[in-house]
Length: 310
View 1 (spheres, helix red, strand yellow):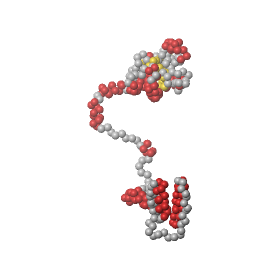
View 2: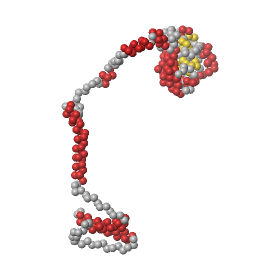
View 3: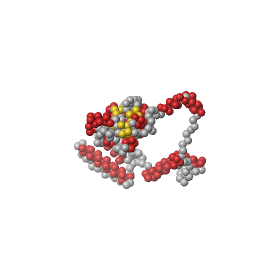
């Protein structure tokens, strides 16, 4: 469309809109002006369509329309290509230049994927032995000064939670009638277990004391045959038949209610006791044949009897 035709179309649209407004105000619609094919006067600074549109805008809105920005004579596609070329040039100068400079200094391409691997691989790191640094002579000398031989001897005794318990002693006797040398007294007076079970439980108690600042509380441990009969008479179904209880073999304990009733303590025991060989058997857990969260057994000893139900 030529400029002249566009101007005529704009003038006709302005006249039609002005006629619509005047009609709404109750005025008679003026006849559309017929544009004669003549040359516009040279002294006219603005086209007729622009003046008509401006006066009409003043009537409707009371404001003067801003002059339109001059359109560029360069096509939009060419302007986009020019801007893309400028941006690409700047990116090449700011990003690619440091790589090129580093390559020029080292003589190697930063994108060279065929370069041989250097350094240890994962297998070397895993299998390589770790060498510990040597202890300083000053530290060794200070150790000898601050820790005399008597302290070292007492420390060696402290390593055993039950110094008087002989783990190598033979386990002799029957259920509920074990020999005296086949039992070791625990930290709680009057409570006994088989030597290996006693040693493991005492080690667990040391870890318990380090975590909670007190000893682990026990209700029962080894039970002789007479005690088993008494428990059976008192508890009925919830007690094992005399002569078959793991308490009679010195391989089971019953915890106090303050251990099983405290969620923090019980969670700690559940997570740590198996590391010391002690567990709450499956039959005594929730959903088992009897729910006894206080009953814990020495796994290796019970498995040796062929009675472990994990």
